[in-house]
Length: 109
Length: 115
Image (cartoon, rainbow over all chains, first blue to last red):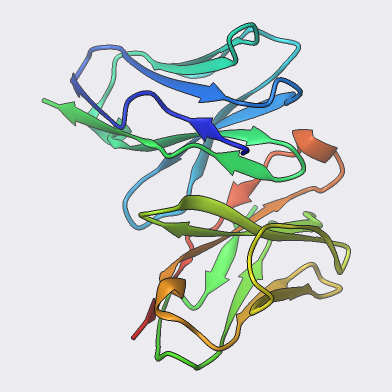
């Protein structure tokens, strides 16, 4: 069936380190992908997006990489901070958002 | 711009009752989508409304319904509540004009507990 999945359910990093969260998607026809961050008690917050005609996009401290050959997305967070602790979802947009299971990022001081 | 707002934030109901949740999109956004979030199933798409018409629908039973008003505000209704309907219900709005490339922005959600 349709799916967007994540390789690592939990990721623990030290404050100041870089974090990498990975995601696999199933539909090679998908042309738009989004990363969301969800903190406890809140709705998902848009972080960064990428279209299929790109393989890399950078934001403030975040970078998304897209590898269409293996249908893989990754979110890189530079100099991870305690405020980055949250659950991160990748989503594939095909007239609706198809979400992965989520990865919990825990940042330790 | 104000973000997506949802009311109420918390709701407790008993089995068999019905419930109506409300969502106000970002000003200027014409598309409203609803999602259900549970620990077991994750985030699942319920339906999308655009210009007062349901444009897309997920795989949920007919007990789940929605509507959109002329000001783009949306409501969703769940009838004959079941214990398994306990979830966080999220509303997301987008301009609605860019097809699959429309970025959706989420509200804080309504936490529904069915006893």
